[in-house]
Length: 403
Ligand SMILES: Cc1cc2nc3c(=O)[nH]c(=O)nc-3n(C[C@H](O)[C@H](O)[C@H](O)COP(=O)(O)OP(=O)(O)OC[C@H]3O[C@@H](n4cnc5c(N)ncnc54)[C@H](O)[C@@H]3O)c2cc1C
Image (cartoon, rainbow, N blue to C red):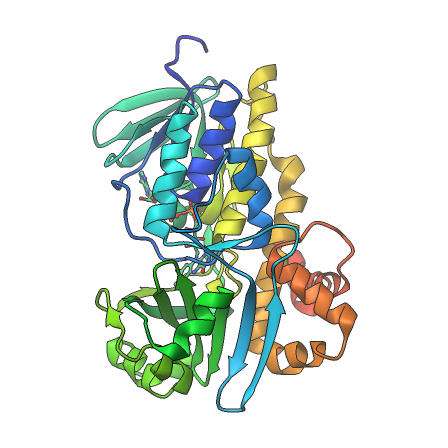
């Protein structure tokens, strides 16, 4: 094995790829990371969860409060009904709202500073995982290594190659979004003071409002396809934005930074997340609707689990074991499915109205919901989470998997 130039090749330089690469390079492994883009590059998904912070600490990330806005809570609002409920998130770990171009670039530069060899604007085209090595063909060259980590995001290189991507049908949504700068209206002051993410419930789905440093806002509308009818483009976004008193007031005089963009069909699982000399992490392992801002959190947590398991295997020369990561499957399912069933409840059983507002009166329920919103998923003490995982839907999923 020592004649190979690299121990690990990481495909993809988003939060999952840079996390896995950095954690392995920190322990002396030779890591090559390949990303098809040149950073800084745009990416949607600005709101972080508190429980990502311990991972960022391990990576040596230092937050500059001039560049990133501290996030202190999540507020769910139904303007039409005149009700709202806020969950404060400032606890043991301080999360941030981040402009992804800047944040992802910081993570990549940090990986390089830990010794990761980074190739940008290079695309992984094909991969062969054999008993004795992996070979990775890109649009520039071919590389060999002991192991491949697939962190290609929703491109899901290995999942698609293995025909293992399954859409989560009942979460089929699309999203329309943009950024605003010069958000100077007085009505927006509290957004920047609290740093809260706001979720506005509307009849066809929900808006996110995420404040960022420098008085900028990320605003997006997530729509349930069946509810939207024929209208899907920017006009739909504009119509719903104009109907929201909160958004209209906050965006008075603000400047839209780019044309409204769209992303569709974004919830899926990857049924083959690991195998002979490869493992997937981040969105490449499975992706969920963003209503609870779980994407980057799951990306860095799954990357951490893959990197920690692989480090031990590389030291013991046991990385060719195709079942290497099986031991972590249960923890993965707990994390992913907790969020998945939480999201499904949001859409299909009026979670916000039936539970969040009730939670105002129940301290225990409120604590449990807060735990999920913070990403505190592996304590085993959260009754609400236990109920989610034990629900009829969860049992059906387990039955489907067993078939
Ligand atoms: C509408 C929307 C809103 C969201 N909002 C939030 C939010 O508020 N908070 C949150 O935490 N998450 C949010 N997310 C999710 C979040 O953006 C993702 O979960 C997160 O970026 C996953 O990180 P990753 O590293 O797995 O993938 P990515 O960040 O997508 O990185 C993958 C990288 O792989 C590279 N790549 C792909 N294919 C190849 C290839 N063949 N060769 C080389 N490189 C390749 C890409 O260039 C990219 O840089 C949102 C997502 C959507 C769609």
